[in-house]
Length: 98
Image (cartoon, rainbow, N blue to C red):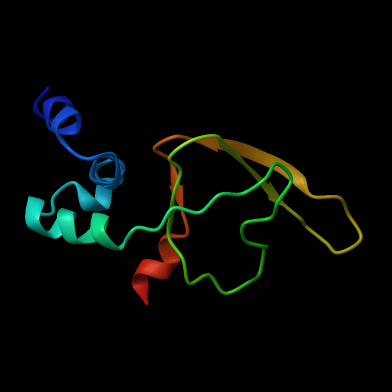
């Protein structure tokens, strides 16, 4: 319940940051700094955000729309659908590890 109240009083960027479990224990001033460095990026339907095997240097939090996650088991096979991510979901957590 407290978390829900916190979400309603935060800016949209800060609210999205709190949706990431690793960020939930951070003090509000640190969360504000995280929200300050968030950049909004738009992708069109069908765009690849990151490709399998690429070194990821970006952490993504989905603010609107959906992201289809696929995996290609071999280069001569079609990608296999794994899941769909939507608002509040995130990916690219390896980028946070440096």
